[in-house]
Length: 376
Image 1 (cartoon, rainbow, N blue to C red):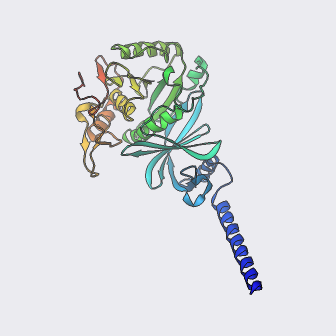
Image 2: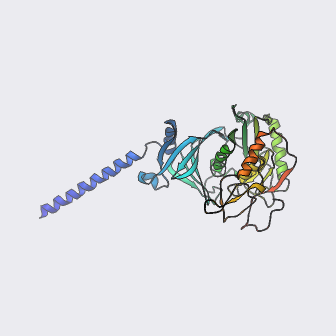
Image 3: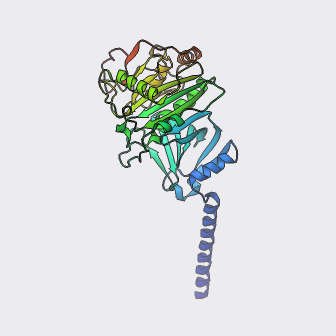
């Protein structure tokens, strides 16, 4: 009897060890040895479309069976450059069954998913396989300070001009104010810009789009704002910079839109301003996640009157140019059909200098501020 108990115990121990080995072998089989960012680069190099599995939380980074599936569908023909002359690429993808835009730059890999509550960003870097998440309700990363790039020199600035292309080009040049240097610039792109410029590429297929970020430029990214003439001051500052840097003049085949991205409201009672059909705009990161799409939309001749609230998905959503927003409605993450047409007509024309500013411009929040905008 005793011998039977010993034999049974040995059998249980051997069986337990066997399944532990299987579990370990399975984990090794499903988890790549390289970091997530390197694995992504390898997947892209192997040809698209391509599917791979990535951890979704800190716990999942150790358990491959809980990974999420990323399907990299195609590369976007959009130019991208971050401060310090760091290039980037963007991809159309599906992340855990949801439409997504992936941005790959430097040591960053960010997955942007437009959702009803905001843009959900899942990011990775070369240091670890543990993903980080950008809270949709929190813009500023208070826990980690962004390592800043060196101030741009004239040679660096000129090197960041878009390369020659067979298509007409529109460059959206975003200057990060000195008061947002503690915000990860890749996260600014992933949350506010990636989903928008991916959609705009479909709206304007006749043009190649560029997104360029610059920071720490004396007389440009350190100017005061928050007053009624802030947009005019920004216009004067960027005009002087363009003259100094000899930026190519806008033409039928090359257009520039310049935005100052700030921490606080750009003018009293507003989180964004733009010249209608013009070159300059301002947007605050304290605005809604559509604020950059909204203000750049104005520079492309999109207007409030042609915005829509849609109900097709069962829950109301607002197109990008809605003038007064509500937290009770989602974002459609696109422009209305009328505004898409306005923008195509605008970029097809020869360049003209606008004479009437569009001031002020938000959009506002109904719940936070019940009074109507002064002129928007």
